[in-house]
Figure 1: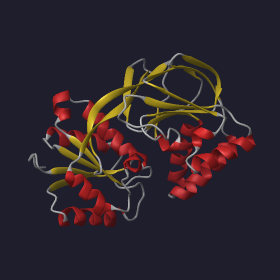
Figure 2: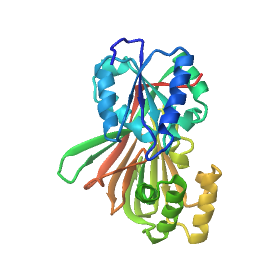
Figure 3: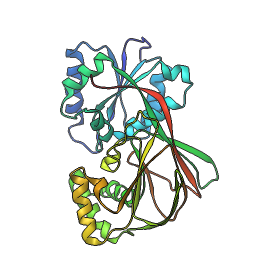
Length: 311
């Protein structure tokens, strides 16, 4: 790799089991060259290699790092940037060309997977916005203190269980649609509520809860009013509705009116303390996190990442 500051470091993260990965990259590469972008490119072979490759780009002096991937790959990049000193981080701008199973953070800004030419034009204009990151701090099974940053959201409970099922069934079916249908069917056999104890601002929630979303951004539609630049997190606590109300909830979710459901209780805060969430899985930006041991907290850090946004 070159260490010339003006060059972009581009990391291509192919979709899992995608037969069109090479064709997809060829299209993106041609677009970059046609628009005169000076770049070096690497491809991640596995999810685990993303952080290693981003750290390599940082250490080689790239000031523009563009992730061609989805929410999980972008999450890895953000966590790599947060692991270096503030001066180094402040000199780097993070860009995104959406290419994932979940592109929620890209959609928040108006980036669309099929509009490569427009996306590259926006990235070239280098409009930088400092954005917030959420952070979950917890203790793992070994008793070690851990933390993980997120751009989009943390899910606790049923939504995390569905995401976990979808990940497992996708390995079986190799299809996003089939895995989603299968996950929804298997949801019938999942527990639909979890005993939780939450502290949000001055409110204490101690009861059975179906799912919680803590959003730094739109949270896959569960925190539709959240923005990653106000120093606050939006929280949606969903109590267990009746079965008929559950279908109504899905309808409101699809139509963007999720907060209108009477089982959804919204909050806005800079910290959520989870004192108890019995057997509830946790997802960070769509990726399953090993269930924390004991209480954990979710906070927000304001204006810590330079992100390239549309003009």
